[in-house]
Length: 371
Ligand code: SF4
Ligand code: SF4
Image (cartoon, rainbow, N blue to C red):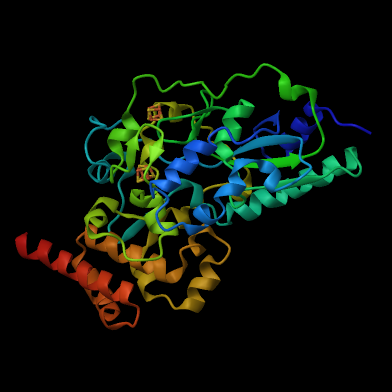
């Protein structure tokens, strides 16, 4: 038995992967860039990137006998656009306090990809498993492995090489017909497809950003060192999710009300006018996850947090990380009524939470004194 790429594509579409293409296995096109990026320390405290660096060179580190890499993309509910704002060059925190994207005080912002009530890794893995099962049925004995986000693979580079889109100045994969609000996943297999060589709409040298610099200008923490080079250690996504330590004071006020991720460099992108709004049910944005109650986060016990968020993306920074982030957001909102809920953290044993609490109270009090 054999399988045509069109059959695989049709099957993947049924599982919610809207875009899919493949290439023969090659060394990661952006590997040298990735190595230089790690060397410059732009990965912050994400030590796993440093430790597994060599594995990123070729996807065969994940599946030795792989001959083909199939790249797949699945859309999630996009965030509100900020394109209507009169000036894209103003600080994003100011942009976010006005217009369509207004947030009630006491609430925290969650990046669009994480506003579903299930962890996207689990949702996509389940579908990749089905696709693997289907391919193994068509090509008995084939080797196949599905990966999403956690394996050592430079997904955006391979997606660009496979022709799924181009890498924008904001470092994300973009498509003219869909913008950038989608997840990437990969299927490695020893099955080969003729279609891996067909003409593709995008290549590694595609660039449809033109003279636009909206994402670079609007980034609240100025995390882009240059187009397509992100200093992750300054990025709000890294700070709120991956970074477990103290957040540098000079960056805290720039985080605005973001408590899990940040969408600004996507919200200002003109190509996201084309963002696909339909997604599979399991990834659809849920109102309860869009603007979370920050005082409730401060009041939560570990058990309550586990019950409410264990299966959602909010679980990743754990309660401790979310409480640190919540105190920063409340301080940025200058919410006087939050002081009573922040105060108990000043005496807690966790030095990061106690330091953040003292800073947050001082900042709110300072704002009250000068108002
Ligand atoms: S996610 Fe936010 S902080 Fe990170 S680069 Fe984009 S705009 Fe900047
Ligand atoms: S905002 Fe402009 S420069 Fe940035 S990724 Fe989008 S099109 Fe490219």
